[in-house]
Length: 172
Image (cartoon, rainbow, N blue to C red; front, side):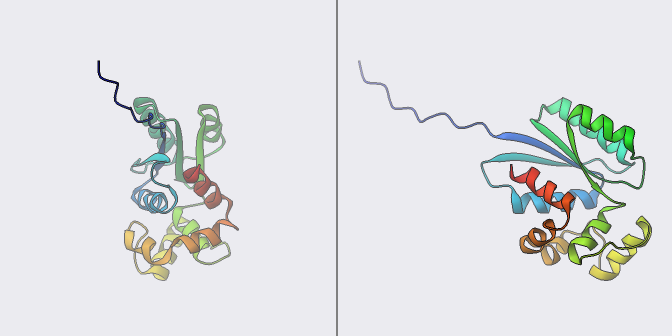
């Protein structure tokens, strides 16, 4: 009888994570962060778009996707201006969904990343400020490549806890 061929050791199983953004802008931003911070072969991150409708809908969408595909962990990034409050936060804690809140909207967080200080205004005013500063809306991928490189994000993470937590979620 011939000796058995040597088998390679089994591959380590990668953790899987679901990351849901409220809209297209969040999906593009999260995909940019994924490309920068998820090391190949360490973790499989799926970024999905809940297509708006407020924070409560984003959480429900994430829970349905998580149940359907059996991810190891789930997180959401959402605006706090519509349908988001303490009942939804409690539900997220109970279901063990990590929440990254952009208060009041993603554009406000992006403006804070670009320049220290809290921008003033409601979500509509902040979206206008974002377009004035960067020359395009937040769902354009070119903006992130030009203005939000890894060095800029790492520096901003030192002063913005939500960004630091999001980067930590992607790295671990």
